[in-house]
Length: 221
Length: 89
Image (cartoon, rainbow over all chains, first blue to last red; front, side, top):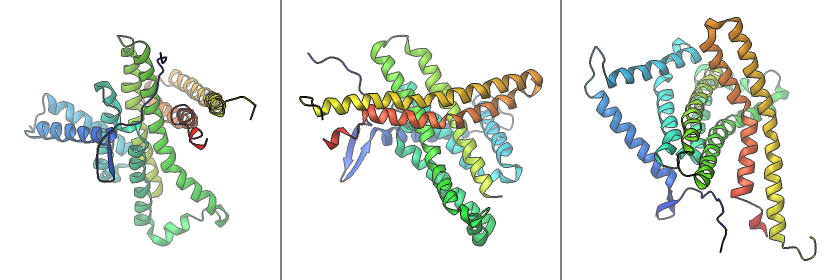
C-alpha cells in the first residue's frame, strides 16, 4: 500500500480554450470579481444621506481607505483612492477566500506579479508625468552617474519583492492549512484559519497597499 | 555518484536538506521583528496616546523585514513541491 503523503497540487486546470489554460486561480478571480460587483451594486443602489445598516459599513471602509491614502501620499493625491481601494478590496477578498474553501488567487505568482507590475508601471508613469522625461532620466543617475546599475537593480527589485512577499505569505499559509487539514481535519484548523487567512490576509493587504502608495509617492517627488 | 545509489534518491535527499537549510534564513526576520516589537513596546510605554500609529508603523516595518524570510520560504517550497532538479535526471 502506498503511504499517505502530503502534496500540494499546483492550481488545477479547469478548462482550456485553444492553447490558453484556464486554471483554478483565474476562475476564483472571476468569482471574487462577481462577488465584488454584485455586492457593490446591491449596496450602492439606494444610498441615503443619513447612512444606516450596510451603507454605514461601506462608508467606514471607504473612510478607512481614504485616511490611509491621505496619510501615506498626502492630501493632494486623493486621485489614487480608486486604485488603492480596488487593490485592497481585491487582495483582501483573495486572501480570505481560503475561508470559503477556494484556493486563494494570491497564492499564485501570476496574480501577485500582475498586481505588482501595475504598481511598477504606475511608478514610472507618474515619475515621468511629474518630473518630465529629462528629470525622469536624470533620476536614474542620482546621486552620481556611477550609481546607474544599482538604481536599475533597485527598480527591478521593487515588483519582485512586492509580488513575492504577498505570494509567499499566502502560499505559506495555504500550505500550513493544507498540512493541518491533512492531519487534523476537524475543529483544529479554526484558529489556524483565523491567523493565516484573516490576520495575515488583512496585514498583507495593508502592506501591499501602503508600499504601493509609498513607492508611487516617492517617485513623484 | 556513490555506487549502487539511486540518483533520484540522492537528489531528493539533497533537496530535502536544501529546503531545511534554506529555512535557516528564518532566524534573521525573527530577530528583526522581535527587535521592532520590543522598540514598539518601549514607544507605547513612553507615549501611550500614540499607540495606534506606533502599531501601524511597527507592522509595516515588520512586514518589510519579513521579506528575506519569505524568499527562503519560497525556495524551500519550490525544493519540496516543485523540485526543478528531478527533471534534469
